Length: 292
Length: 292
Image 1 (cartoon, rainbow over the protein chains, first blue to last red):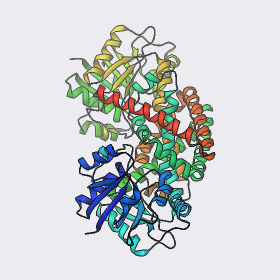
Image 2: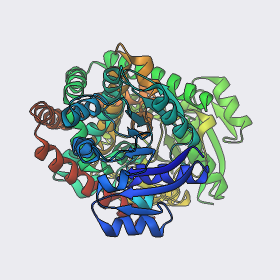
Image 3: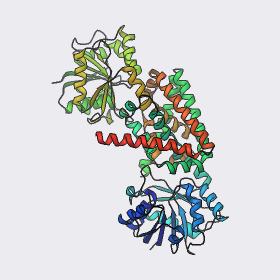
């Protein structure tokens, strides 16, 4: 058995899907959930996602050999403090947050140093739905999980987290935490901000009923991620603000140039940018379908 | 038979899908395609989309009782000129372009006045793929088609275009051309510009290989429309530039405010905007699934 006792802090889409996947893979003997609201935890038990629960993190992690923090990144520091002194000697701690430097900062703030048993992780999996009802065993299958170990991270801890994710069907890669945060600011954090902003702008327009009624597939796809959890994304914007603001500034410059060229009727510039983007997108989309 | 002889100018995704849908519905006796490249027209014949073709618009429209202009909007003025004097007395002309005031302007420029037989139309259907190979009979099923008749548009012409689209399974609505262009600037034209800009910005970043490799589902959905035809979208930006620039300016303001709040670490503002957008998007998405 890969994991004796798994403790999942935050039993929502991400944590619940991990629990389902590990149970289906037979990788886990017992799963304990932690949350603040008993009715949600009872729901998770009745759905068969977890075996039991506790609202107290310190009590819940006792005896667990694997602890997964699946909470908004702003709650991590509190989790580290609450677990301090209660972890089993062989416990490994990992998380699923979208900002990785902050995990290390939160641990340092709570514990004075980055513990060797901590392996920050980030599964690149869609999460515009939230809640335990949306959790599925296949969420991480063929998806990428990025681990960002620190300098002193224990090699065995790293291997155990890697094995856990591989058991869900994910592909595991390693990356430096700061590099991860710069890349994800561009690929994930920026698009989420853009989608929220788009829906918000259109919702404030005079014609907004006709706008939403006549929205085409492009808008639907574009705005889907605006259904993501506002607390999760506020925390991401607060903890990876420098990187997000940087790429947002570059994006605003690009839009300003496009707007100038639209106003000037400069079709050649517009066509050049659109062609360049299409070529990149088509190349990327083809690579993806080849890669499975 | 609804249509005796259908002439489709521009046998790509939009025109080809219309031909397939009308043939499947038994609404059309004969379909003639018009294009500049013979190999594409031969392909459309071999795929059974059209019965015959001509590279000369004037010859092709002779005897047609329905002419559909399915070309980038920048090519419409030329089409009107080329058809002038060749149309059958009972011919109706419509188009599928995403900018509707421009259709009227192009007709006026080519013919000196807006002809009564012209019924501008716009099917709201996804078109990030292009080319005759992507044409399917179901493209317009349960989609909305907006017709924007002018003051003197012939009532019979309007009814015939309406009946044609209904035969494809679409829902037909009417709207004033200028209002259509303002609404579509927000729901469709702006998202396309944003998607092209996003892929272009990310493609120019130092880490762009890792960016595309680690892109999540949100980015994939968001950037899908950046695969759209650059010529089509250049023409849309040129012919609906005022409306697009206006909504783009509002969007850039929203992004500027978000960036300031991200830099200032103002979580309350971010959460407020994200919540407002999520509520709107969820409401809209639910309404859509109810509406079928």
